[in-house]
Length: 309
Image 1 (cartoon, rainbow, N blue to C red):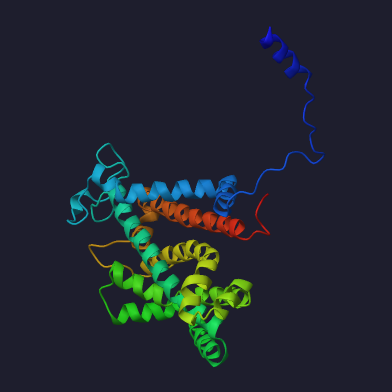
Image 2: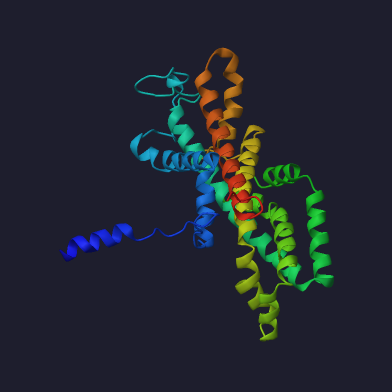
Protein backbone atom coordinates (compact mmCIF):
# COMPACT_ATOMS: atom_id res chain seq x y z
CA UNK A 1 0.00 0.00 0.00
CA UNK A 2 2.79 2.38 0.84
CA UNK A 3 4.39 1.70 -2.55
CA UNK A 4 1.16 2.70 -4.37
CA UNK A 5 0.83 5.90 -2.32
CA UNK A 6 4.45 6.78 -3.14
CA UNK A 7 3.88 6.30 -6.87
CA UNK A 8 0.75 8.48 -6.77
CA UNK A 9 2.62 11.21 -4.90
CA UNK A 10 5.41 11.08 -7.47
CA UNK A 11 2.90 11.52 -10.30
CA UNK A 12 1.17 14.45 -8.59
CA UNK A 13 4.46 16.26 -7.85
CA UNK A 14 4.68 19.40 -10.04
CA UNK A 15 7.39 19.41 -12.68
CA UNK A 16 10.29 21.79 -12.30
CA UNK A 17 9.76 24.98 -14.32
CA UNK A 18 11.95 25.27 -17.42
CA UNK A 19 13.83 28.59 -17.69
CA UNK A 20 12.79 30.84 -20.55
CA UNK A 21 16.24 30.68 -22.08
CA UNK A 22 16.55 26.92 -21.63
CA UNK A 23 18.84 25.02 -19.32
CA UNK A 24 22.25 26.56 -18.78
CA UNK A 25 25.18 24.15 -19.05
CA UNK A 26 28.22 24.54 -16.89
CA UNK A 27 31.40 25.92 -18.41
CA UNK A 28 33.58 23.44 -20.26
CA UNK A 29 37.34 23.32 -20.03
CA UNK A 30 39.16 25.43 -22.60
CA UNK A 31 40.84 22.51 -24.33
CA UNK A 32 37.56 20.61 -24.55
CA UNK A 33 35.83 23.59 -26.11
CA UNK A 34 38.71 24.01 -28.56
CA UNK A 35 38.69 20.31 -29.44
CA UNK A 36 34.94 20.37 -29.96
CA UNK A 37 35.25 23.39 -32.24
CA UNK A 38 38.06 21.72 -34.19
CA UNK A 39 36.10 18.49 -34.68
CA UNK A 40 33.06 20.44 -35.90
CA UNK A 41 35.18 21.75 -38.77
CA UNK A 42 34.79 19.10 -41.47
CA UNK A 43 37.76 20.33 -43.49
CA UNK A 44 39.96 20.05 -40.41
CA UNK A 45 38.88 16.45 -39.88
CA UNK A 46 39.54 15.67 -43.55
CA UNK A 47 42.96 17.36 -43.36
CA UNK A 48 43.90 15.45 -40.22
CA UNK A 49 42.87 12.19 -41.87
CA UNK A 50 44.99 12.97 -44.94
CA UNK A 51 48.05 13.78 -42.81
CA UNK A 52 47.67 10.61 -40.74
CA UNK A 53 47.24 8.57 -43.92
CA UNK A 54 50.42 9.95 -45.50
CA UNK A 55 52.45 9.50 -42.32
CA UNK A 56 51.45 5.83 -42.25
CA UNK A 57 51.79 5.52 -46.02
CA UNK A 58 55.33 6.95 -46.13
CA UNK A 59 56.80 5.45 -42.96
CA UNK A 60 54.90 2.19 -42.52
CA UNK A 61 54.19 1.48 -46.18
CA UNK A 62 57.79 0.56 -47.13
CA UNK A 63 57.71 -2.29 -44.59
CA UNK A 64 54.63 -3.72 -46.31
CA UNK A 65 55.32 -2.84 -49.94
CA UNK A 66 59.05 -3.57 -50.19
CA UNK A 67 60.99 -2.14 -53.13
CA UNK A 68 64.61 -1.47 -54.05
CA UNK A 69 65.19 2.28 -54.05
CA UNK A 70 68.99 2.14 -54.20
CA UNK A 71 70.03 0.18 -57.30
CA UNK A 72 68.98 1.43 -60.73
CA UNK A 73 67.78 -0.95 -63.41
CA UNK A 74 67.36 0.69 -66.80
CA UNK A 75 65.95 -2.50 -68.27
CA UNK A 76 62.85 -1.98 -66.11
CA UNK A 77 62.40 1.71 -66.95
CA UNK A 78 58.93 3.06 -67.75
CA UNK A 79 57.05 -0.14 -67.12
CA UNK A 80 53.30 0.47 -67.00
CA UNK A 81 51.36 -0.15 -63.76
CA UNK A 82 50.96 -3.86 -63.13
CA UNK A 83 50.55 -6.36 -60.32
CA UNK A 84 54.32 -6.32 -59.81
CA UNK A 85 54.67 -2.53 -59.89
CA UNK A 86 51.39 -0.99 -58.80
CA UNK A 87 52.26 2.47 -60.18
CA UNK A 88 54.80 1.37 -62.76
CA UNK A 89 58.46 2.38 -62.82
CA UNK A 90 60.32 5.59 -63.60
CA UNK A 91 63.18 6.36 -65.99
CA UNK A 92 65.74 4.69 -63.70
CA UNK A 93 63.71 1.53 -63.18
CA UNK A 94 62.66 2.41 -59.63
CA UNK A 95 59.22 1.30 -58.50
CA UNK A 96 57.14 4.49 -58.60
CA UNK A 97 54.96 3.70 -55.59
CA UNK A 98 58.01 2.94 -53.47
CA UNK A 99 59.63 6.11 -54.80
CA UNK A 100 56.63 8.16 -53.71
CA UNK A 101 56.90 6.68 -50.22
CA UNK A 102 60.60 7.53 -50.01
CA UNK A 103 60.03 11.05 -51.31
CA UNK A 104 57.19 11.54 -48.85
CA UNK A 105 59.44 10.58 -45.98
CA UNK A 106 61.87 13.35 -46.91
CA UNK A 107 59.06 15.87 -47.41
CA UNK A 108 57.45 15.19 -44.03
CA UNK A 109 60.76 14.98 -42.16
CA UNK A 110 62.02 18.27 -43.59
CA UNK A 111 58.62 19.88 -43.08
CA UNK A 112 58.38 18.96 -39.40
CA UNK A 113 62.06 19.46 -38.54
CA UNK A 114 62.43 22.83 -40.26
CA UNK A 115 59.16 23.96 -38.69
CA UNK A 116 60.42 22.94 -35.23
CA UNK A 117 63.67 24.87 -35.74
CA UNK A 118 61.84 27.95 -37.00
CA UNK A 119 59.30 27.80 -34.17
CA UNK A 120 61.92 27.59 -31.42
CA UNK A 121 64.00 30.44 -32.84
CA UNK A 122 61.02 32.63 -33.66
CA UNK A 123 59.31 32.08 -30.32
CA UNK A 124 62.41 32.94 -28.29
CA UNK A 125 63.30 36.02 -30.34
CA UNK A 126 59.73 37.27 -30.40
CA UNK A 127 59.23 36.73 -26.67
CA UNK A 128 62.45 38.54 -25.77
CA UNK A 129 61.74 41.43 -28.12
CA UNK A 130 58.17 41.84 -26.89
CA UNK A 131 59.00 41.67 -23.18
CA UNK A 132 62.22 43.68 -23.04
CA UNK A 133 61.23 46.31 -25.59
CA UNK A 134 63.27 49.44 -26.10
CA UNK A 135 66.60 49.20 -27.90
CA UNK A 136 66.68 45.39 -27.85
CA UNK A 137 63.28 45.23 -29.48
CA UNK A 138 64.31 47.75 -32.13
CA UNK A 139 67.52 45.91 -32.99
CA UNK A 140 65.87 42.49 -33.20
CA UNK A 141 62.97 43.73 -35.33
CA UNK A 142 65.26 45.62 -37.72
CA UNK A 143 67.29 42.44 -38.10
CA UNK A 144 64.06 40.57 -38.88
CA UNK A 145 63.12 43.24 -41.43
CA UNK A 146 66.48 42.89 -43.17
CA UNK A 147 66.15 39.12 -43.44
CA UNK A 148 62.57 39.42 -44.65
CA UNK A 149 63.73 41.68 -47.46
CA UNK A 150 66.04 38.94 -48.79
CA UNK A 151 64.52 36.59 -51.38
CA UNK A 152 64.44 33.30 -49.48
CA UNK A 153 64.52 31.10 -52.56
CA UNK A 154 67.65 32.76 -53.97
CA UNK A 155 69.45 32.53 -50.63
CA UNK A 156 68.69 28.83 -50.31
CA UNK A 157 69.71 28.22 -53.92
CA UNK A 158 73.06 29.95 -53.34
CA UNK A 159 73.72 27.99 -50.15
CA UNK A 160 72.68 24.72 -51.78
CA UNK A 161 74.95 25.39 -54.74
CA UNK A 162 77.87 26.38 -52.51
CA UNK A 163 77.60 23.35 -50.24
CA UNK A 164 76.75 20.52 -52.61
CA UNK A 165 75.40 17.31 -51.13
CA UNK A 166 72.09 18.37 -49.58
CA UNK A 167 70.66 16.02 -46.97
CA UNK A 168 67.44 15.99 -44.99
CA UNK A 169 69.19 17.52 -41.98
CA UNK A 170 71.07 20.21 -43.90
CA UNK A 171 67.99 21.35 -45.84
CA UNK A 172 65.93 21.34 -42.65
CA UNK A 173 68.46 23.59 -40.93
CA UNK A 174 68.68 25.95 -43.93
CA UNK A 175 64.91 26.23 -44.37
CA UNK A 176 64.32 26.54 -40.62
CA UNK A 177 67.03 29.19 -40.24
CA UNK A 178 65.21 31.45 -42.70
CA UNK A 179 61.62 30.60 -41.72
CA UNK A 180 61.53 31.84 -38.12
CA UNK A 181 60.97 35.47 -39.05
CA UNK A 182 57.19 35.30 -39.29
CA UNK A 183 57.00 33.36 -36.02
CA UNK A 184 59.08 36.04 -34.30
CA UNK A 185 56.74 38.80 -35.44
CA UNK A 186 53.63 36.88 -34.42
CA UNK A 187 54.97 35.99 -30.97
CA UNK A 188 56.23 39.53 -30.40
CA UNK A 189 52.78 40.96 -31.14
CA UNK A 190 51.17 38.46 -28.78
CA UNK A 191 53.69 39.17 -26.01
CA UNK A 192 53.13 42.92 -26.32
CA UNK A 193 49.49 42.35 -25.42
CA UNK A 194 50.26 39.79 -22.72
CA UNK A 195 52.91 41.73 -20.82
CA UNK A 196 50.35 44.28 -19.56
CA UNK A 197 47.95 41.63 -18.27
CA UNK A 198 47.25 41.38 -14.56
CA UNK A 199 48.88 37.97 -14.08
CA UNK A 200 52.15 39.22 -15.58
CA UNK A 201 52.09 42.38 -13.47
CA UNK A 202 51.38 40.28 -10.37
CA UNK A 203 54.30 37.98 -11.17
CA UNK A 204 56.58 40.99 -11.61
CA UNK A 205 55.41 42.39 -8.30
CA UNK A 206 56.36 39.11 -6.62
CA UNK A 207 59.90 39.47 -7.96
CA UNK A 208 59.86 37.22 -11.03
CA UNK A 209 62.72 37.86 -13.44
CA UNK A 210 62.39 38.16 -17.22
CA UNK A 211 63.44 34.56 -17.82
CA UNK A 212 60.70 33.31 -15.49
CA UNK A 213 58.13 35.55 -17.19
CA UNK A 214 59.10 34.32 -20.66
CA UNK A 215 59.13 30.59 -19.91
CA UNK A 216 56.31 30.41 -17.35
CA UNK A 217 53.82 33.02 -18.52
CA UNK A 218 54.40 34.57 -21.92
CA UNK A 219 55.37 31.62 -24.11
CA UNK A 220 52.70 29.24 -22.65
CA UNK A 221 50.00 31.87 -23.23
CA UNK A 222 51.25 32.54 -26.76
CA UNK A 223 51.24 28.86 -27.73
CA UNK A 224 47.93 29.24 -29.56
CA UNK A 225 49.49 31.52 -32.16
CA UNK A 226 52.61 29.35 -32.32
CA UNK A 227 50.70 26.10 -32.90
CA UNK A 228 48.62 27.64 -35.68
CA UNK A 229 51.74 28.95 -37.39
CA UNK A 230 53.47 25.55 -37.19
CA UNK A 231 50.99 23.95 -39.58
CA UNK A 232 51.46 26.68 -42.16
CA UNK A 233 55.24 26.44 -41.80
CA UNK A 234 55.15 22.70 -42.48
CA UNK A 235 53.13 23.30 -45.65
CA UNK A 236 55.49 26.09 -46.76
CA UNK A 237 58.57 23.93 -46.11
CA UNK A 238 57.14 21.04 -48.15
CA UNK A 239 56.31 23.43 -50.99
CA UNK A 240 59.77 24.98 -50.84
CA UNK A 241 61.44 21.57 -50.86
CA UNK A 242 59.39 20.58 -53.92
CA UNK A 243 60.40 23.81 -55.65
CA UNK A 244 64.08 23.26 -54.87
CA UNK A 245 63.88 19.72 -56.18
CA UNK A 246 62.07 20.87 -59.31
CA UNK A 247 64.85 23.37 -59.98
CA UNK A 248 67.51 20.70 -59.47
CA UNK A 249 68.73 21.80 -56.02
CA UNK A 250 66.95 19.21 -53.91
CA UNK A 251 68.22 16.10 -52.20
CA UNK A 252 71.08 14.10 -53.65
CA UNK A 253 71.00 10.40 -54.48
CA UNK A 254 70.03 8.06 -52.86
CA UNK A 255 67.70 10.53 -51.14
CA UNK A 256 64.78 11.83 -53.18
CA UNK A 257 61.95 14.31 -52.79
CA UNK A 258 58.69 14.78 -54.61
CA UNK A 259 60.12 17.83 -56.36
CA UNK A 260 63.02 15.77 -57.72
CA UNK A 261 60.57 13.20 -59.05
CA UNK A 262 58.43 15.84 -60.75
CA UNK A 263 61.47 17.52 -62.29
CA UNK A 264 62.61 14.24 -63.81
CA UNK A 265 59.12 13.11 -64.85
CA UNK A 266 58.09 16.24 -66.75
CA UNK A 267 60.66 15.41 -69.41
CA UNK A 268 58.63 12.33 -70.30
CA UNK A 269 55.07 13.61 -69.88
CA UNK A 270 54.59 14.06 -73.62
CA UNK A 271 55.63 10.41 -74.13
CA UNK A 272 52.53 9.18 -72.32
CA UNK A 273 54.15 8.07 -69.07
CA UNK A 274 51.44 9.61 -66.91
CA UNK A 275 52.17 7.43 -63.88
CA UNK A 276 55.46 9.20 -63.18
CA UNK A 277 53.80 12.65 -62.99
CA UNK A 278 50.23 12.63 -61.74
CA UNK A 279 50.42 10.35 -58.65
CA UNK A 280 53.32 12.23 -57.06
CA UNK A 281 51.78 15.57 -58.01
CA UNK A 282 48.48 14.59 -56.39
CA UNK A 283 50.32 13.50 -53.23
CA UNK A 284 52.09 16.85 -53.00
CA UNK A 285 48.87 18.82 -53.46
CA UNK A 286 46.96 16.71 -50.92
CA UNK A 287 49.59 17.02 -48.18
CA UNK A 288 50.00 20.79 -48.53
CA UNK A 289 46.23 21.27 -48.74
CA UNK A 290 45.71 19.12 -45.63
CA UNK A 291 48.11 21.17 -43.52
CA UNK A 292 46.44 24.37 -44.71
CA UNK A 293 43.03 22.98 -43.71
CA UNK A 294 44.37 22.12 -40.25
CA UNK A 295 45.98 25.55 -39.90
CA UNK A 296 42.76 27.37 -40.82
CA UNK A 297 40.79 25.28 -38.33
CA UNK A 298 43.31 25.84 -35.56
CA UNK A 299 43.25 29.57 -36.21
CA UNK A 300 39.46 29.60 -35.89
CA UNK A 301 39.69 27.44 -32.77
CA UNK A 302 42.33 29.50 -30.98
CA UNK A 303 40.70 32.85 -31.76
CA UNK A 304 37.64 32.99 -29.52
CA UNK A 305 36.13 35.65 -31.79
CA UNK A 306 36.03 33.11 -34.65
CA UNK A 307 35.18 30.06 -32.57
CA UNK A 308 31.77 28.57 -33.22
CA UNK A 309 29.60 28.43 -30.14
